Image (cartoon, rainbow, N blue to C red; front, side):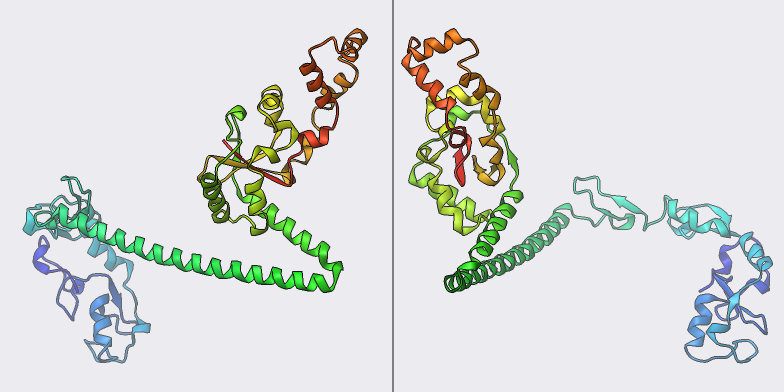
Length: 354
């Protein structure tokens, strides 16, 4: 629809008026043959009823319309018009081509975005501020958030159910493979490879951890603590085939020789930073897996060589052979000089509670 003629300063040329609405042309278009100009909205609505020119009744369709000539656009642009918000107190008079940019910033625009200053921060049209209620708005926001949380809970429950079904399917497949293996022993290597890959995938999904107080580890966890850690292992996706072994190895009696006693841990604590540990999600516990610690049977060859060479000086070696040093120290030295692999390499898997 065109602009109201009464909003313009001075007289408006009749060629700039829409024959349909009698207002000043807004977004004008032109018929190709008769060159009559119309508001785009007016002629579109007209063509929904009939496909003829409103002025001379010649056949015209919407596809035939084209923009008006530049000279007509320039004439329209120079017209002086009052602001749409004159009824709300705006006294601006400006060129027609500047009207839209003015309306976006007009302080009298009742639909101008306004942010609530009472605390809720809602952005609303200015004319709705007087009826705005922060509590009502915040209640609506909370209800929307609760609805989203409910939907997410439902989705999570569905995913958890699907995951449980998939785990059951995997266990059935494993049982099927074991049955096949019993009939064909050559498949044992395949099953072991699959199990190893499952363990490796799970270990890689855990976050790295660093144990800062090796002397403060819980070396003899009770049944309750073991049950809590076991549940966390299962929830983290730990392969069921190793869960019980992990919990069993949480006790110091199953730790490698380099960690076996408090005295040993105190003496060798400078070596422990070489262990690769992963955090059990949500718990003060880590797993130290053999697949990530194969290097521990090779560490400290220099130290071992020094001790095997009788602490460098032959006289010291003689003292040791003659047991002139303290028996306890001699025992520690013998422990270090033999069995490096069994001393440092973790068992298949270990849990450490820190």
